[in-house]
Image 1: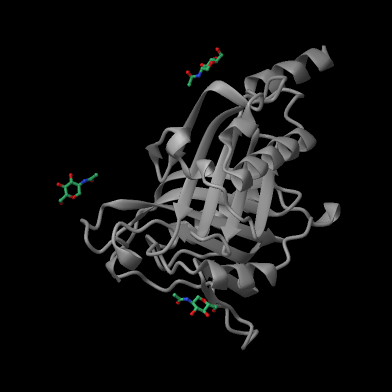
Image 2 (image 1 turned 135 degrees about the vertical axis):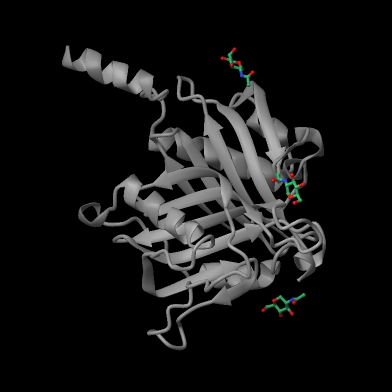
Length: 276
Ligand SMILES: *[C@@H]1O[C@H](CO)[C@@H](O)[C@H](O)[C@H]1NC(C)=O
Ligand SMILES: *[C@@H]1O[C@H](CO)[C@@H](O)[C@H](O)[C@H]1NC(C)=O
Ligand SMILES: *[C@@H]1O[C@H](CO)[C@@H](O)[C@H](O)[C@H]1NC(C)=O
């Protein structure tokens, strides 16, 4: 009976025993190999035949996608969500002829054999928000996103709530955000950190000129690495559009013992630096 209930709970969550951390790591490594080679065909066998592919919230044919361009992956960082059966990867390609910073969600079926059912990327390059892959690379290499010791891990609810509080505060500057000290935020290649003054908590955003409702949030959470990524829509930023126009954005957040340690933001602009 007990094992029946466990099986039932697993099926109800849409996740089977196939969705192990190791399987997510293998499939994500294959994605990285395909991106490095610019050969989506390397995903054959890993990608469902009807998988969806989107860049910056728009469907794109894989043949015409960034995945079909060979990129030097100078650095990447991935997290694995065995509950939702998904992974998230941040790719920094600074030394390719065309530099990129790419945030990618891979969503999996959960059934054996594990296959990718959706690939969604926020693809940023020159002209996107604060973009500078050379600077971004040098900052990200200085950060530590190691596994959190088992006894100190936060629950997925705590990790997600920290990132949500950060984004919710854009709509109401009075809301509390569990920012650690120090806390550093990397936006493209711009780094805001407390390094010079450990007491300065420079992940605080202050108030936007108008309250922002950050919607269309999609999460990948990894308790072991104390991290969450939130794909979202960033309103107002694109100065050439109405304030309620949301541009595709992703916030990759490291949470240590309930507090935000790092934030990496990748945000797409319609006009250079969103016209700001
Ligand atoms: C893809 O195919 C699978 C298996 O046939 C099916 O269950 C699923 O609904 C399909 N997904 C889409 C997005 O069509
Ligand atoms: C990008 O950052 C690097 C390293 O900080 C700097 O040397 C370079 O001038 C920057 N490029 C642009 C276009 O700002
Ligand atoms: C955005 O604002 C404009 C002008 O106020 C309005 O016409 C439009 O319906 C709004 N769009 C959305 C998606 O809310």
